[in-house]
Amino acid sequence: MAANVNHQTRKSSDLSIAELLEESKVIASAQKIALDAVSGIGFFSAKIEEDPEHWAGKRTIASWCCIAGLKHHLWIDIMIEAELDSTLAAFQSLTASANANPSDASDLLGEIGNFVRGGFKKIMAADGEESLTPGTPKDVPGGNIHTVSHYPCAKLFTHIKADDFRLIVTVLVNKQPPVAKTLGMLRDRDISLESIPTVEGSTLEILAKGVVLSNAWIDKLRARFMRETNARRITVITPPAVTALFHPKF
Image (cartoon, rainbow, N blue to C red; front, side, top):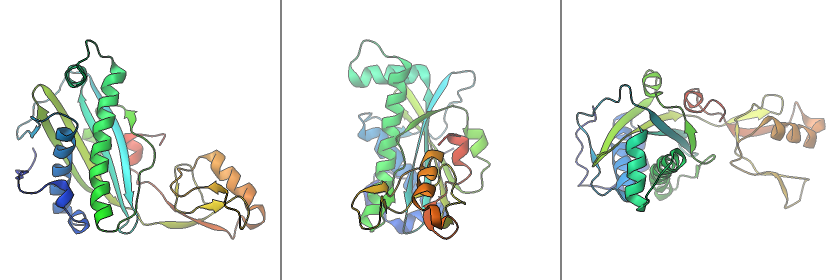
């Protein structure tokens, strides 16, 4: 059940980064951001459900994205989950379309996720917090809420209703400080915090800041610094373990 928060007094853009750093205020901030996101995309009747319906036996879909705040070492996972049929109907209502398919429903949830992520990004930018938004929203299996509810971090499950459209916005906040890794320590899914030129002094980059490393990227870096494999270090963020519950291949 969502906490009773007065959403009329302040918008998410009025919140400060300090409020994201206290667990109790993360929850209040995330609720405001989630409601602003659903309203902002066009569902003006959106409101927090104090006693949400259960979706037992219904087919759900979900979309996941994340954002990292560099100064305060924040990592925020965001998942939007909804019942498929009501999401299809919501897409048709929003776009005045005669028909809708599951990919349209996924796009709608991904767009809401982008709005939520954008709300956090604005808060961070207002306080001079540089942020990274690795990747685009990705479709993920529904039904992860029970699993992630046991993960030890600040978390919130916000149930929102806009007419017949119901969704759950899940937000998990972790502290993920950067780590300087040798080339041999780099792993798939590490996120680079450095821009590395193809050769010293060049303006061309072999690696840009914010890139999610794959094994192919790591091989390129090892080739670039072949003689420094054990000495050269690259600063990265490693996503928290809970991210793999949302999207194992991120």
